[in-house]
Length: 181
Image 1 (spheres, rainbow, N blue to C red):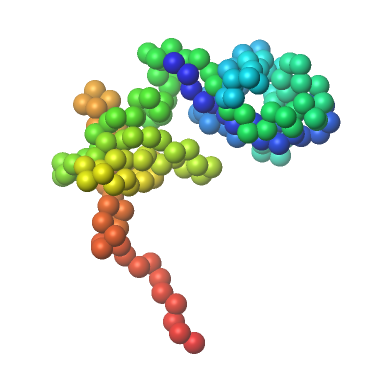
Image 2: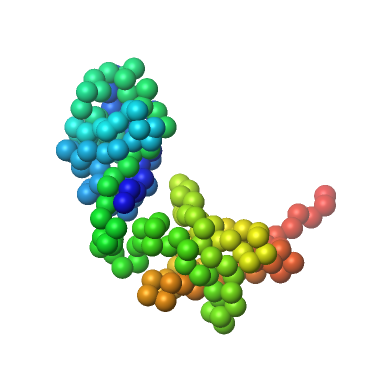
């Protein structure tokens, strides 16, 4: 099974390094020197990581055969894909691979059916569970412990505690309002 583990950003410096947007909780395993990664688009790869380092809080990678800024810039927006055994699970029991979450039933604590997870959207600060509802609509559920306190892979369900307004706009609470001057 293939997992997207990073997206290549802009070139850094003149020696072929690139910034990467990490999309794995295990970068030390998936993005280590020597790792061979498939790519999307596939015509760019496979790419072998030559070196990696953190600079100003950002991961920088250099790939074998990419020796200058021009070659590095040509890789921009390429997805890096690792081959993973489908039976493999993350070391941390609070972490999940996307394929483990897709198609889980989503219910509230009281058992009300919300829908089924159709995809995971990876944003810079948190992930979103995209839940297809029985009426054909979708709801985006922030994948944080306060809102998704339980993932039960054995029962194939995710339990959520939605804040007011997440599932029904009419229940939304106004956090603040401006006073007219």
